[in-house]
Image (tube, rainbow, N blue to C red; front, side, top):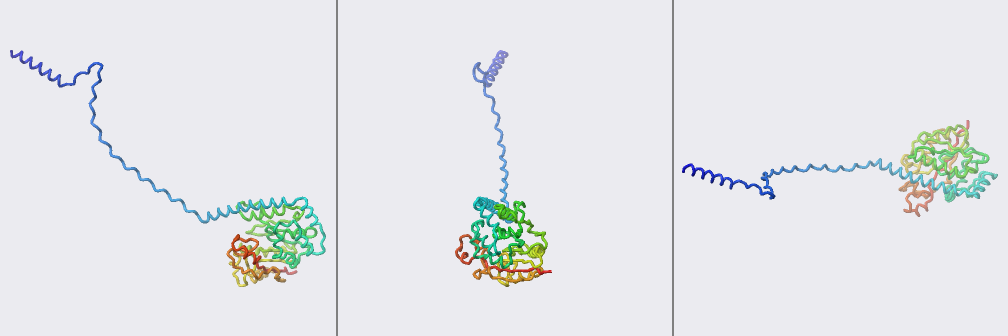
Length: 358
């Protein structure tokens, strides 16, 4: 009896244990879900790295900006020069070429007649004749003793205003030499532009300018390589440039060497007030006459005569853009243009120096 009761108890205990366990899966039914693992703790979020501050743009170098502006202006001026030169060359058609040939072949009784014939010729660059009343080319050149047989050296021909008058007068019996900067120089140099401009001027008419001799010089070290061969040296509105570049004495010395004994050094220059500081007035394009005379005579010349043919008492010499405020530059554009046009061109000294005869 005791054994049977114990067996029954063991059976009941097994049944209770089976009821407490998970029942086996039914065939074809879903598998029992796997026990869920405890969720992992979220990792703490790292702070975002600090963004570096944007670098400030580099400050513009004023000198570099000025250089860029100057180069841009130089490129613009070069294109304008080339366009003008092409237009001017095209103007020399067959009719004008025939007129030039007749001009250079003509015989004139004196220098004045030869100059007046050149003044009337259509070969002159349009607009140049408008400057005649202010510049008095016939009177000025006769004052310097120009002859049709002279050998003339023109220092700084510029755009050729005087060159186009001197070339036909000297073409038959005389000789014209002009200085120029190198037209094949550095592209970033304005002096190269000036050299190209004169080259284009001379190329437009071989009949007129074919006999002109060109001496290329360096502005920083001007050397002519001419000694005792010239009758007249002309410096028309150039002296202020010489002083501004620190080469006034050099140019005067070169002129002295180039002249024959008894030869003439003719200077036309924008005239400052007599007591002006040349270092300051030259920046405005002017030089005091007493200073010019003293400097030139100190190089061995003697003042032969002075002329007031190019004087202009209306010139007050105190303009915002210096002498270039006046005609023909009108650097201020239309601002007060009528006022400056009424003044005319600058007041100019006209000085005749002589190299003493040996």
